[in-house]
Image (spheres, rainbow, N blue to C red):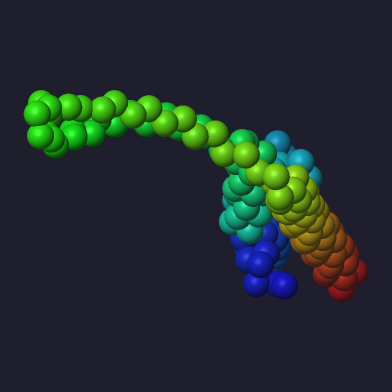
Length: 167
């Protein structure tokens, strides 16, 4: 499942790399306004997730199929003209035909198909929410791992500076 969250993982790894690089160069880390907060990280992860976009598109496609399943078939009207050949002693004639067809389903399949479409739509929406939750969970896990790693680096830098002062 890890391959599904490549974009989220890349964000976490980049955040970790920036934190470790800055601490290794001896730059004192202070919280500034340019740092990403939890809400921004979640927003970026969810906006850039192709898995989430695919799950939401599937749910919308199934919703459109559900709408189409609930519609009654269209009636149609046809008009036609038929030319009758001339017979002995009569001139050629033409005959006009009008046909109206209204499809009626008495089999009971339509309500069953509609119920099936509705349940497929609900399943797809649930899958979309599950995907959103999994991405959010993974993103927040990486975010807090990065914060913890940054704090560990700060503590290590403080310990090193204290040891150097004591020596």
